Amino acid sequence: MRRKSVALSASRRPLFDLRMRGASLRLGRETKIMGVLNVTPDSFSDGGWYEDSGLAEARALQMEREGAHILDLGGESTRPGSKPVTVKEEIRRILPVLKRLARRLKIPISVDTYKYEVASAALDEGASAINDIYGLSGDKRLGRRIARNKAAVILMHMKGNPLTMQKKASTKDPLSEIASFLRAAARRALDAGIPRNAVVLDPGFGFGKTPDQNLRILGCFDTFSRLKFPLLAGLSRKSFIGHLLDAPVDQRVYGSLGAAAVAVQNGAHILRVHDVLPHVQMARLIDRAAAEREV
Ligand code: HH2
Image 1 (tube, rainbow, N blue to C red):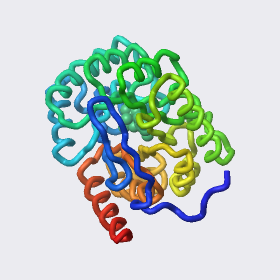
Image 2 (tube, helix red, strand yellow):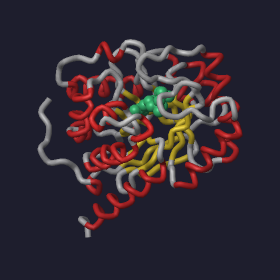
Image 3 (cartoon, rainbow, N blue to C red):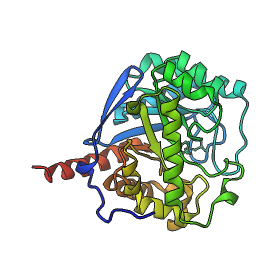
């Protein structure tokens, strides 16, 4: 895929008003931070809040205080090689936490699930968005349910599934493949009745991509701007960062910040992160400096 040679600066990101259920986020000037809360026993880098919804709530409130704009709640790990959990188990993990958070948090909550039944239960409890790592390519009912509840959707690209994805990574340049998947995913969302202003696209760092391909996607992130939807980047603590820096998962915060800064400079509107405060500070700096270009 041919790409524009001039990267977009933060201030030149296209502006969008993202309509989430019960919330609206102005995207483009200020980089938005999505804090990750995994209530799983096996997530690749967090999950200590598993089985204790009080601890999970405290962690979520901490992320809100640190400046997160959205909270992303997940009940199934999708790290490479992970096996899916049952609908019943995923609901058992997320629902008590979601009920608490819906009462306490002021920021909107998205739920990281691709399962119709889990998404339905979450939407019944007031979730503002569904984060679907399969980009609405699974259960046909999911998109319609999101539309009916006037929630937003995050559509991510993945090659294969978490069990197979590292074997599935293609040898080809991934940019055009991802762009055409995301274009089709957005079409599925619109056909299901989700309005344009409730859709976010995400190239899916680490999901069925080699370390080199992840770096290429990062360096060429502006490619996806031409899809004309807000863009999310989930880089935090991902293994390609560890691979490049020879750093275990608990020592990837500086690499994650560097990667996130590149994504913001290349057009990312939302960063999905585990370490909220450092990303809030980093993004504030970039956004503020970029605004100076407009003066
Ligand atoms: N990455 C993970 C999970 N969900 N969703 C989107 N939209 N983009 C991402 O990059 C993304 C995602 C994997 O990270 P994490 O949730 O920390 O790990 P695990 O899947 O092991 O719980």
